[in-house]
Length: 165
Image (cartoon, rainbow, N blue to C red; front, side):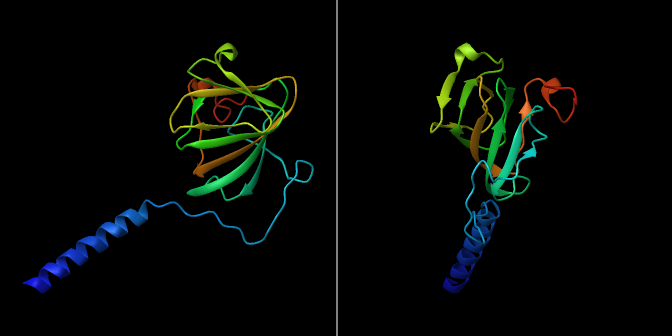
């Protein structure tokens, strides 16, 4: 009977450990050391953000499960309308200035302006918006994939509305 109890306990522990492992996130890894500068990075149009945004993947793959790092470049006077993300994000302003506000309406008077070197954390599912001032802004995004964005107003989604600005 004692052996059966130990066997059952071992089986339950093994099954629960397996269930927890399925929820784990892949660790970030790199094959070689790399350096990145705004002048040498390969910028591409970012299709899930309004026209004008560029992105460059530094580490990982935002379309897959796991941690990734991307740089995002926004032109001067650029707004990203209110939206949410499925996972927490950490954003650091590398150059320029970035306004950040919470809520379902883009209101620059209710947000804060962050200078280069400043960071903020966006919790999962919190509606927020960002904007730039009169200069180009580059931010670093650290997040968990798969990365996505849900706009509060579906008409703001450039994937659905090719004329969205």
